[in-house]
Structures are given as structure tokens and as C-alpha cells.
Length: 165
Image 1 (cartoon, rainbow, N blue to C red):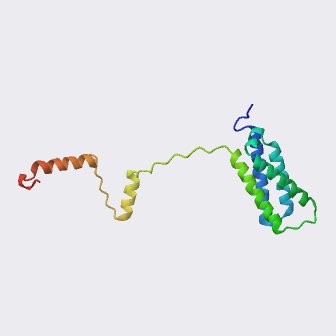
Image 2: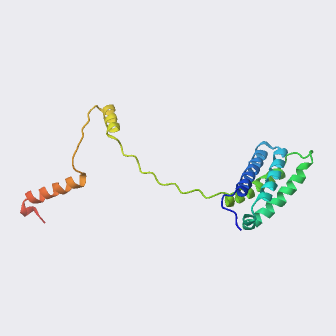
Image 3: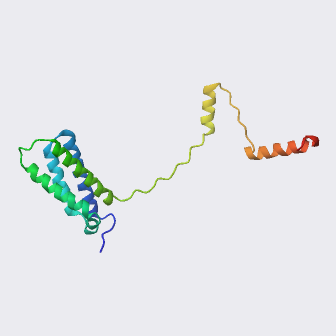
């Protein structure tokens, strides 16, 4: 039996994975090993809480991430560990792996509808005109296409037959 696309277990795994990724970012930014240790523990919990169907779909990412998180947690359990380039690299790798897993878990976002451009109101046009020179000319009547057709008919009716091609 498959779990629903937005099950509680799935969302819990997503939240834990995103929190772990945030911990790795903070660890990199501030150079704090304890933050990386917290991220590794959260990552392991996220991977353990992941539904089986999803874990099978992202098995490669899960296996690599779980192993790396376990190694990182073991390394950081020693309180004498100082921040170094290797920890920085490992945190970056963990963050990228967790982001890849989150992309698989995260529900798809619906596409946004394109907005129609706003047509100016008579009030806004009048306001702009009053700012410019104070003159407002309103043309009320037929549409432009209909006016063009009537003008063309009038020209055709009154034009000199010798000028026609």
C-alpha cells in the first residue's frame, strides 16, 4: 500500500531534511561543528522517517547521505574537533544531498496563471492628464476598427474614379 502524496510521515521527513540542510548551512557560515552535528542527527532522523516507497525511489541519495551523516556525527562527537576545510566540504555535500532528497519529497507547486495587464481607468487617465497640462479630451463612441472601416468606405465612395488603381 502506498502512502498518500502528502502524508504526515512524508511531511515530517521533509521538515526534518530541510532543518538538517539549514543546520549545515549555518555550520558552514559560522564554522560551528556543533551545528553540523545537529544537522547530521536531523538528517539521520529524516532518512529513518522516510516512507519506504520514497526511500526506494531515492535509494542512492539516501544510502550516501545516511553513511555521510553517520560518519560526520561520529567525527563531531569528539568535542576537540575544530572547524576545518574538510568539515566545510562535508557539510556542503550533505546539504546538496538533502536538497536533492527534498526536491523528490516536496509536493509540486501548481503553475501560476499569467496576469492580464491592467487597463487604465478613466479616473487614472484624467489624473495623468491633469498633471501633464490639465487638458482632458475624451473620445466616446465606436471602436477603432469600426471607425477605420467607415473612413475607408467614405474614401472609396467619394474618391475620384480616375485615381483608383
